[in-house]
Image (tube, rainbow, N blue to C red; front, top):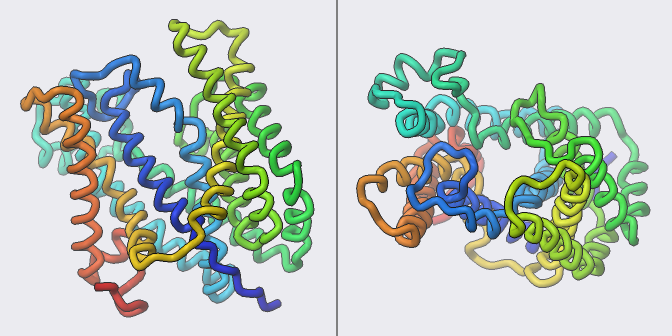
Length: 382
C-alpha cells in the first residue's frame, strides 16, 4: 500500500528546535540546582528548584512526541519498515557509540575528580579506567549519561518499525483519529499519566537503565507513538489547536500545586505522594498539548534558517552536556558570581555546540558520528 504524503507542518519543526533548546538551558540549570549532576557550582541554591520544576514534568515527553512526529516523515521516505530501521539504526547507534566512547568520558572524569576524590588526569582516566565495564567511585563505566535518550529512541524505533511491518492496514491510524479528535485527547493521556505518577510509581524516579526503567517506558513509548500517529492525523492536530488553552490551564494548575508543596519546604509527607504525582501528570500532558497546539497554530511557517536548525538539533544534543560540564569545571577557580557563571555557561554551550555542528557537517567522516546523513546523500547548505 502506498502511503499518502504527510503534509508539512513547520510548527512542529520549530517546536522540536525549541524543545532541545529548553533542554540545554535545563541542563545548565542542573549545575546550580541541589540535585545530583556531574558538575556543581558553588552558587547552588534551593530556589533554583522552582523554575526547574516549571519544565521538569514535560520536557522529555515533548522530546519523544516530536521525535515520533519526525519519524513519520523519515518512514515515508524510506524503503519500507526494514529500510527505515536500517537508516535510523545508522543515524542513532553510530552517534550513540561515538558519544559513549568519546563525548561522555569528560563528564564522568569531572564528576569523579570533583565529587569522589579521583586524582588521575583525563588521559589516564580515559585509557585505563573509563572502559572498565564496572564501577569506580560509585559511577558505572562506561556511561550513557544524557545519551540514554538516544538509546531509548532507538529502542522505540525498533518497536515502531516492527509494528508498521506487522500492521498493514490503516485501522490503527483511523482509530487514533477518532479517539483523539475530541475531548478524549485531554482525558486519556492525562488519566494514563496519573496512573503512572500518582498510582503505580508515586514520587518514583527514572533509572535510565533500559532493562530496569518501567516507569519511563510507560511514559515515553506512548509519547513517541503518539507523535508518530499525530504526524498523519490532521483531525488530531486540529484538536490540539482547539484544546491548547485547556492544556495550558492544566499545566499551570499542576505546576501551581507542585510549587505550593515546594514552597512549604521539607519532604512531602507520604500521603501526599499520589496527589503530587497527579499534579505532575496534569502539568506533563497539559504543557505538551498546549505547546503542540500553539506551535501548529502560531509557528506554522517556514524560514530560511529552519532547515539548518532542525538538522543541528541532534549534534547539539550529543555534545551540549559535555560542554556544560567541562565549562562548569573550568570556571571553578574563576570565582565568578552565580549570574556570571550562568551567563558564561549558556554562551559557551551555544558557541561550542555550534562549532561542533559547523565543523562536523563539513567533514565527511564525521557526519555519521554526529548523526548527520552522508555528504553524498544531500547538498550541504552554505
